Structures are given as structure tokens and as C-alpha cells.
Image 1 (cartoon, rainbow, N blue to C red):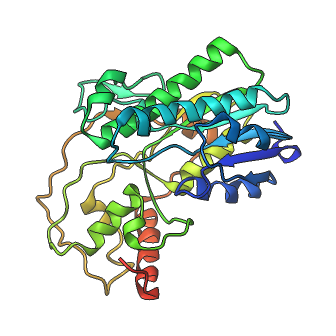
Image 2: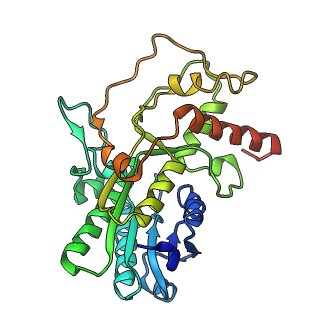
Amino acid sequence: MAQHESLVLVTGVSGYLGGQIPKPALKLTCRVELEIVEDIASRRSLDSIFTGVGAVIHVASPFCLTPKDNEKDLLRPAREGTLNILKASACTSSVRKVIITSTMAAISHIGSGPIPGKVYTESDWNPVKWDDAINSTDGHYVYCASKTFAEQAAWDFMETRKPAFELVSINPAWLIGPFLHHVERFSALNESIGECYHNLVRKQDTLPPTIVQYWVDVRDAAKAHVLALETPAANRRYLVVNRDKFDWRKAFNGIRDRFPEKRFPKDDDEYIVASRPEVDPLKAERQFGFGWIPLAKSFGDMYAQFYELQESGLPE
């Protein structure tokens, strides 16, 4: 698909990942349209913006770790928002490809320990059930469930409606790295980078526990969306995760030399990281020719941005 000949609509550009997508898209000479949609779960909010659109990168999704109503605040809006994008795309003859942002959590079992011999790939699905997500008090679990249900609904739509466009899902792990979107204060940072900032300003000298090991630089995740759009052979799902597993000891040790004057938690030779299931991003590596951004650069670039914002007087 020669994307330079058509208009690309990107949703969610005010967010962490969505804000990174226009840059690599423009490098590929795409014409990019950025839209602010008041309510993506409302079909009427979308119909007027699809005129002349040749491709869609749908990143926007509701995010809240303390929902008052799991179904109303997260589960239904995520699913309906994705379906509305697909329905609007199907109603125009110009859209030829749609890329949606899912998550690695839609592939792996949330919170599961190591399963002997198991390696998660794009063929796997999180087995979460709708009723379990409705009744859960774990906001992170509910959010991951909402993304899982949204992606499942998208593939069901493709199977039943058989629209003229192609669908590709990008399933990234935990995103870290620098951000382009505007923030009013550090407390407004999203969960991904907010946790990293919290561990910068925390008073303890000990390393924080490592909960999440699967990560990818936000710039690699953005690039994967654009390459999926540009690559004719791109198909179905792509697990986008750096093979070098994350842990806080490795992360801090990787940037000590870059910021020798800064205070970090003390190194600890006895630091223990719990085992997690294995994952295989080979499909994305082969399709997109990825060499992943190293943890030291990703983590270091993000912390350099934190220090600059601190020096500029950004409030907590």
C-alpha cells in the first residue's frame, strides 16, 4: 500500500504512544490527519472525519486504574470505541488498512507465573472472562481485560463483516522512554512513565521490586504501527516486546555513568527478580527488521527528560 498517496488518520495523539506516531509516519511521507474526538465510543463523533482517509492507526482507548464502574468506564468504551472505528472505516471505500493498538496483556495470562515449556506468541490469548473483569477490584486487571475484549471484538468484526480493508493489531509490552505529549505536572504522568518517575524521587536507597519484566521503548512501538501500515505483507497480530527483560537493577546500572552526579538506589548483588513466562517477538523482528532500542538508552533518555523538567520548575 503506497501510503504517501493517501491520508492517514491517527487517534489518541494526545497520549504517550499516540503522540510518537506522527513523526515516523511523516518520515515515510505519509499525510497525517490528527483528530480530537470528544467521545470515540459515540459513532456520531467519527462519521465526519473519515472523508478521504486511506488508512487508520487507532491508538485511543479509555484508561483508568480506579474505575467506579468497570463495565461502564472501561470495558464497554474500549470495545465500542474500536468497533466504531472499524464500522466507520467499513462505510467508506477509501480506507484500505486499519492498525489498532492492543497490548501484550491480550496475549499472555495476566499475572501468571512461569509455565514450564510455554512461550507466548501471537497465537495466544489472555483467557480473561467478561464477568470476572466486571467484578474485579484490580484496576490494572480490568484495563488489560478491556484491551483484550476490544481486540477480540475487532477480529470478530473482520470475520463476520468481511470489510474491504485489512486489519493489523500491534501488541506492545510495558512502554517506557521519552514522551512528547504535554503534561501540567509530574502527577499527571501516565502509569507507565509515572512509575519510573516515582522511583526517581523515592527516598529509599534500596532497589524497588521488579513486577513487570516485558517492556519496549515507546519509539519502537510507534515505529511498529507505521511499519505495519507501510508493509504490504503485514498481517494479523504482532507482539512488540524487547527481548532484553527489564529489572530495576539493570535499568539503574545502565544509566549511572550517564548521570554520575545523580543519586540512584544502591546496587545490590543479591537483588532477586521473579521468573515470568517467556515470550517470542520473532514475527515482529522478521517483518519489521527490528533492532530494539537498548534499555540503557530508553531509560536514560526518559530520565534525562525528567531532569530537564525538574530544572524547568514543573510542579509535582
